[in-house]
Length: 435
Ligand code: UGA
Image (cartoon, rainbow, N blue to C red; front, top):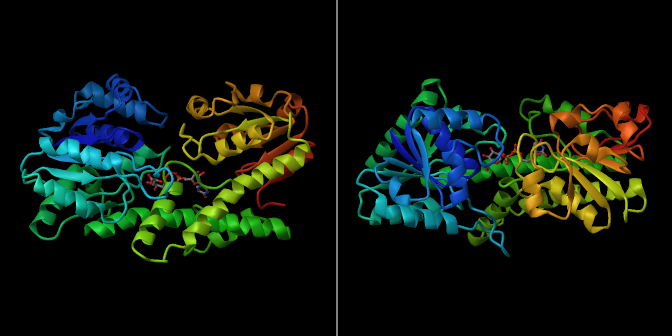
C-alpha cells in the first residue's frame, strides 16, 4: 500500500521506516530540511536502538523516501499525521499548531477514498473537528484516529509488534472502510494475533491520554511512597517488589526514583487536565498532585546533593546521565537535566556524561560541561549523581570510582546501585526512598 507519514520526529520517522519494512511504499514528509536530508541519507536524526538498521534496509529497498514537499503525499492512500503537540507556552493545553498546519497542507493533495490517520496525542474532540475539515475538502477522503503507544528506546519493536491497535473511526460505512484500510496497513502484526480495538473518535483519543495519565500516576504513586519511606526508614524498592507481586497491581512502572520526564508523560497529563477544565470537569484534579510529586523528586535530589557536599558553591558534581531515560538521547523535560541545571545555578561545577545525550543536552543547556567518557566525569568529583539508569552506570565498580573521585559520595537517583556495596567501599551513598 502507498502511505505518507506527515512529521518525521521520534514518532513519524520510526513509523515511516517500519511501514516500509513491512512492505509498504512510504513517503515521509517534514518541514525540517536537515531532518529530511539525514533521513534521506538513511541516517537516523536521533538515537533509537534498531532504527538505523531499519532505515538502511528500507531506503535500500526503494520503498522509503523523505521530502519537504507535501505534494508528494499525493497518490498515497493512507496519510499518517505524526507531528508534535507540545505544551503551549504559558498554558498547559496541547499546542495544536502543528497538527492543524499539517492537515491544512495535506488537504489539497487528498484524493477520493484517501484516509487521513491521526497518530499525534491530541485533546479529545480533535478528530471530530479534523474529520469535518477532511470531508469538507470535497475529495471524498475520510479520517481515522490511531493513537501510538510506542516507548522511546523500544520504538521499532513497539511499532512493528505493538501490544494492541486502537482505531477511532466514524460510524457506519465510513468506519468499515477505515477499519479495512488500517487492517491492510497492519496486516503483518494482526496476523500474529495482535489485539485490535475499534471504537469512536473520542474514545480512541482518550485511550491514549488516559494510558499515559495512568502510567504517570503509577510512577508518582510509588514516588509518594518513597517520600513516606524516607520519613519512616522504610525501603520503597522492597515495598514495590512486594506489592508488585499482586497481579492486579503489577511490578512494571513502580520504579521509584527521579520520576518521569520526556516529551510525553509530563505534557500529556497537563494537557489532559487542561481539557478536563475546558469541559468543566474536576475529574482530573488529582493529576496536579501526580505532577507535583514528580517534580518534588527532582528537588529532593538537589537537596540530597547539597546535604552531602555541605557547600554547593564550587562543589564539583559528576552527573551520570542527562537523557530522560536510558537508550534515548531525548532530553525533553528530562528530570536528570533539570537536576544538573539546578545545581549549576546554585554555583556547583557540573560535569556531565551521557552515552548518547551529551549533544542534545548541550543544545539546550550549553552552560554545563559535557565530557565524552565516565572517567572524565568522575575525576576529582566531590559527589557523583546517577540520574539516568544507563547499563554502564548500573555496572559501575565502587573501587574504580573511588580511585578517581575526590570525595566518596554518591547519589543513586534511579535505584540501580547496591547501596550496601558502595557503603562497604567507603562511600556515603544515598538513594531515594531507601534507607
Ligand atoms: C511513554 C509511554 O510509555 C508510551 O506508551 C507512549 O506511547 C509515549 O509515552 C508517548 O506518549 O509517545 P516514553 O515517554 O518513551 O513513553 O517513556 P516511558 O518508558 O513511559 O518513561 C517515561 C518516564 O518515566 C521516564 O523518564 C522514565 O525514567 C520514567 N519512569 C518509568 C519512572 O520513573 N519509573 C518507572 O517505573 C518507569
